[in-house]
Amino acid sequence: MAKTYKISVELTTEATLQLFRLEGFAIALVRTLDNVYRISLQDFPIEDELDFYVHCTGWNKTPWSLKIFIDDKDITPEPIRGEIEKGYSAVRGSINFQQDQHEQTV
Amino acid sequence: MNKQYKFSGFLVLLLLTALSRQGYAQTFKPIFEDADGRTSIIAPLGYLGINTENSSIQFQYFMSKSAGADPDDALLLKRNRFYWGVKVAGSAAGGVSTIFNYGNFTPGTSASLFLGHRSLLFQALDKNGEPVLYGSNQIAIEDWLTLRLGGEIANYTLYDAARPFDEQIYSEQFRGHIAQLTYNVLIGGATSVGVSWDVSKVNNIDALSPVKFTQQTILPGPSGQTTRIFEREVNAFSGAYQTSIVNTYGVDAVRYVTPASELNYAFHVFGRLKHTTDIKPVYEAGAGFYLFPKGKVAGGVFLQTSDLTNAVSETPDFAKRLDLGLTVKLLLPGLGVPNP
Image 1 (cartoon, each protein chain N blue to C red):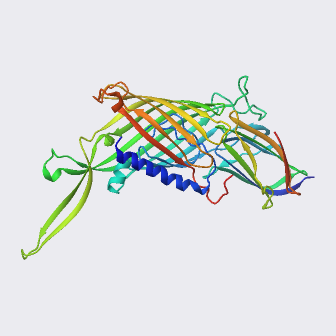
Image 2: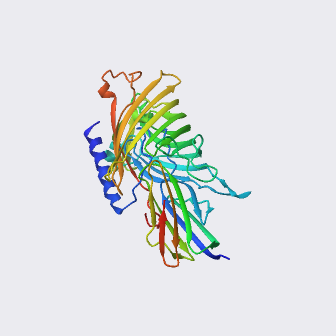
Image 3: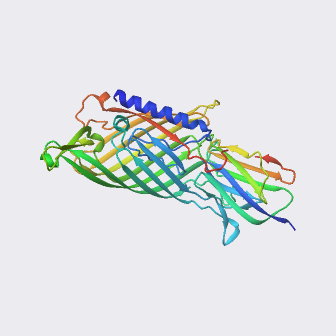
């Protein structure tokens, strides 16, 4: 059985966030006053690594950056970044948060 | 455009460039407006900006929500395509030159409420949540339909030499409103086209001449030996103040170019057709060029003619009907949150 954690997500962008997934679950993020999409989840189940997926649309070269906190610990000291090309950016990746490392695949 | 106007616009550009050195993120702002601050391309995001052409300072917030799990079936997606926003603007009617000449803002405030729907004709996500791409180049297309409802309140001090002396200086409170419907589409992150229709109550304050004078009030004392003279400096607008209801049809097109270098740029062309009840239709047109240096302020210049066919201006020389504007926008500063 997967262990559960408190998770906080901050996705900073001026692009439109179409879809964000954690561990395959679509999670609705709401844009706040400073163009950051945020959410905080209690008791979120994680199997080994944390899988994420970001899909943004907007003007080309618009950047996005993702920060994730697990149990209030920043597991992305270097934010995960992307940039819009051809009107969109769709990035899939996983974070081995127990070793503070992440790998990305597009 | 007079020299003071040029100088004051340049001064504002310098000031904002200095402010931008705090390291804001690279951004793409909704700066594609005409001299009246009107556009068919409404970008649903938050920003704090200054339009130096109509001397307005604007703040905007748009609520947007990404797709989530359908509450009735966790395996399905709920795409959350509805959005709303607010925009508040403070303007110094009469132009930047009025501010710099006299040091006083003419008060004016406006607020707008936006209600919208994105991905109306072009879907961004398929039912499995994968990106929907179009054409052989596999590009994304997104669109927005937005209804804007706005109001404006402004107080003006007016001067009319034709009135009796005691009534020559008087105040007018302007209560304007606008209802605007826009549809815009962004193709491949580089080309945007927007069309809009709006009906608004406007005034002609921009066409009136600013005047400045000193008014003295003389009060003799009861003894007859002392006189007090009170002086008040008055900034007013001279001319026939009028309000009217205008129907405006607008079209905007933007091409955003992103070369390999960090300096991106964009071209903007726009056209307007204005119908007013008592005068014939007026065509407006303009073109703009904007630069987007990485991490810095976004700004540009635009040329606009407010009467393309010389329907109402009685100025046969086309060059004299052209207006040059500067536009500068700043990103809303991160509220304690690190920038990307």
